Length: 298
Image (cartoon, rainbow, N blue to C red):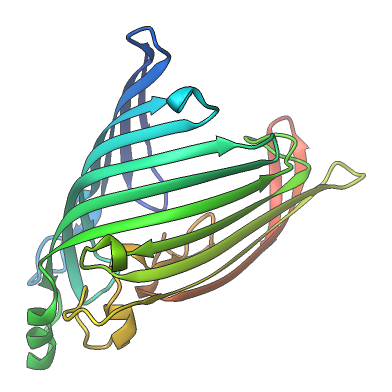
């Protein structure tokens, strides 16, 4: 059994509290069970009539998880979890989006070798959302809120392929990691959110003779809505019509410490997008003991 408790802070939110309880041998059958919780607190505007900021919950999530390492007696890891999540999102300066979702996730993971592995994951969630207008805005924008789905079912399936030649999965100094993810939502899986998504992430690590290290990462992806289901998932005023047809939480965003540094976490663009092209390169210079410096371009 184990218990994990954590507290932290950073550019994504002012405070983050985490907790977990787990058991690695449930019923003496090597089943791994855990209960996990995350609470993120940040500064947000008190209401639409005031610029005063107060501390409030940005993200709260709780889940119960079960992992079977030898599903059906095969070298196949099976995972199942149920979750509940609440989000308060103010990345778009016009609105405060409140969203809560509850559902379940199922997954299969197979390691073909140390270098190659693949996973198949599916999710189904019932989502409720609402928008609070921050700015004095036009009647057209207010009317557009009537087109937003207040409640919808989000069903999806994702296939992920991994090629990993890194010398260490935690602190790599040599090798590379490639991840290819193909995802589909709705369509034959039903649900209101219907989209297709393809994303590739590739990272390289190369040591230099003077103990410096060069690291680079490329991220590319494209997605789009499918079908002709009526209604939008965000206010269509000022948003591309195709973007509004994809749930906001499924779109591409950039910004933050592992993306485009110097910008807020997942803050660009405010409404998200249907394509992404991102390159990162950095030179890591050791200084003394565990301390070092990085020169980077994003």
